Image (cartoon, rainbow, N blue to C red; front, side, top):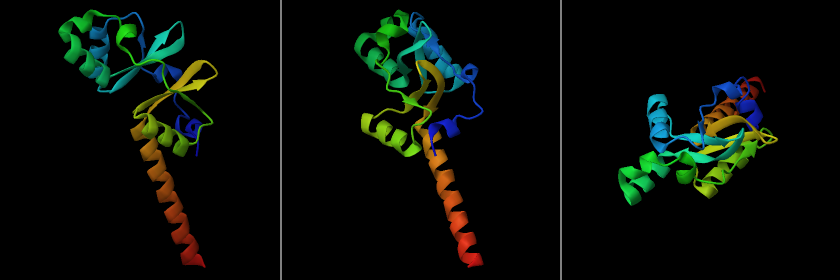
Length: 143
């Protein structure tokens, strides 16, 4: 299965993002309000980076609350590691594990068409394994 199948039915309007020039304070508020762990950071319609809980924690530890007034673009993780619709779920899981990231913007050319978490990928893989196991049970039962 590939990521395109996973994000099928989602629209780019469903993606919660933040502009590169917005203050960190706004990004933190958005993370809390939406109960999410990361946001794609956009500049001119393209993904400029990722802003995550980790970015906030590291900056607060280094700079204190002064970091809350900085633009997200100065605090985000950049460049963003991305994938596309054709990327296999297992390949995306391997990439995220290797790079120690938990969120992945999905691009269609240069436009973002999805934003997934490692939890989305794990759930999809578990569903796939469950379907395979059910098919094997049915095959054995009817053999």
